[in-house]
Image 1 (spheres, rainbow, N blue to C red):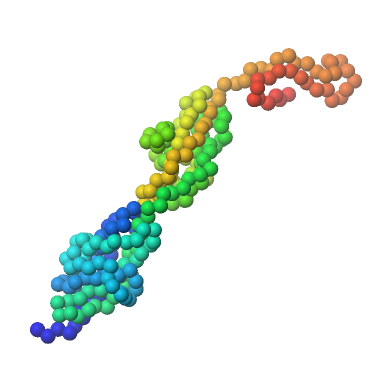
Image 2: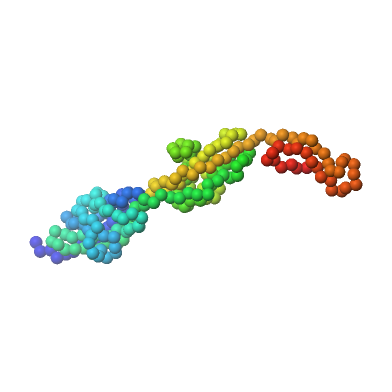
Length: 231
């Protein structure tokens, strides 16, 4: 059988895992003319040497495997060759993929309101990339989640809410998780809840004494350390 008709260009539809992950080995899924061999490339036009090859069935069931570089977003293109040696045009751009093995950063961790405070509903806030999630923990190994994680956007703004024990020092650790699943170091923060009113001032007196000609007397006495006196 004489065959000089080029097959249609393949269609690349998805990757497994999709989008972004820590895995530098990705499976390509798509469709192509039966009984052809598929060649996968990183560049439009399918120049140079293919980065992976597979059968039409392998492309259809997602078993064409491509090794990708870390921390570089790549886009996939494909070309196919039939049994007669005819080569298809290069495909349109397929899905992109990022193999990410860089741990996220998380810094400037603090509480809102600042510690100490009488609020029973503080939040923990700081700085991280908006696309990250932030998990708050109650153990220094970041293995004791204190509720559901918050978004990076929430952490950077209002803060991730936490529950506290009244009138105690409450220790927390914050950890960021990026879209690929990489995790940051544990970052400690302390919140002291103080709901106990201070002692009443004692020993109050004025200078000058009670009766005098001064229009700007001062009031003196003793108050609990760390408090502010108001008249």
